[in-house]
Image (tube, rainbow, N blue to C red; front, side):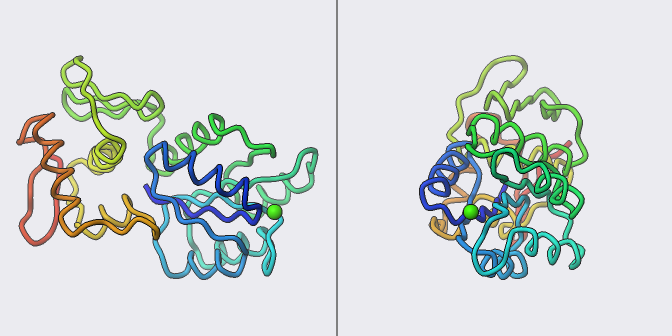
Length: 218
Ligand code: CA
């Protein structure tokens, strides 16, 4: 899952980026509203974490323009303490949720998971495909009840395949979701992660469509 983070405070932005990356998300960080607006027009994101007090264009302007373009990705706004009018205005302008600063990273991670779940049309927190179960909150995978150890990238990739089980995911889709601007993938990194997942879960779980991408049979 790929997240755009728009926050001008260098310390807070850095903390949020590190925290979200540890959760296995690909995160691009921009520090002003105009750059956020441009990124949203040119890249495909699954979620936007948006500070309202941004230079060059306010968070509210970025949000209004985003919804005016018909983009439906979930938006989590960051607001200053006690700014009730900001929360109301933000939610009414098309934000899906808000967090009050100072931001608690655990709460942020939980809200991001909830928004991602709703955007994917799921109410159940645990993903299941056959006897494979993935709990994004606990970052835990079980195969026929037995726990399986996965790296952060393997977990993110598996979640993406499970969320789209039965559908074909192209290489470009998988890579866009796994990597942000700052970590360019090696040309064979995706194959390596797929190989490792097959070794741990069984080769039949992930099918290759040569020249197109991958799919997880339902
Ligand atoms: Ca700010």
